[in-house]
Image (cartoon, rainbow, N blue to C red):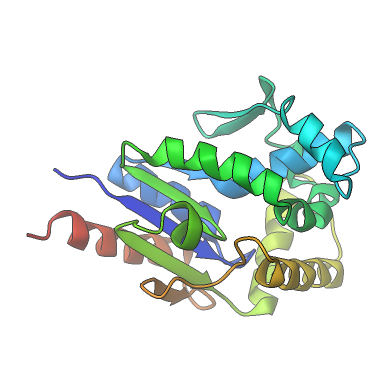
Length: 221
């Protein structure tokens, strides 16, 4: 049976990561959380007092920032940082860090390498447009802002983090603006992507919809 690459892009809080993870599990594919990779770099910069507005500092520090996955966990220099990358501090800085060309190039190279053998589900903001422009299935996920903010709040609560809903909305709106307007690989829907509005969909409905799309491609011809 042939294997394909599934690229899932969209805004924060639309359910990308949760959906992509389960789609990969149902298909027996490898799940790669590209957003976690950018969060890991952001956490590395914050933890090491790297001024990410200073490109010289960024270039020097990136060589000391080694990211890899172990199962569904992300490791930074061999340390598990699953919890650390979900804090509000990282939330507030990840979009400007993600807009840095040197950071994007380092991570895009890694992501492309991970996808060479196919059988991969990757989610992010430029997966279908930049990382895997030839992906067999591209999905772009959207949702109402109120729905997105409440999902993010619940996600934070599960991790033991209490945050004001209005602060979450403000953070999401700010990230949308930065992600969509950055010069390098802005967030946008690929011309051949399938758009899914998840506002009124359960997680299982989102998963089933994408698995059905994927199986149609896998078994065609």
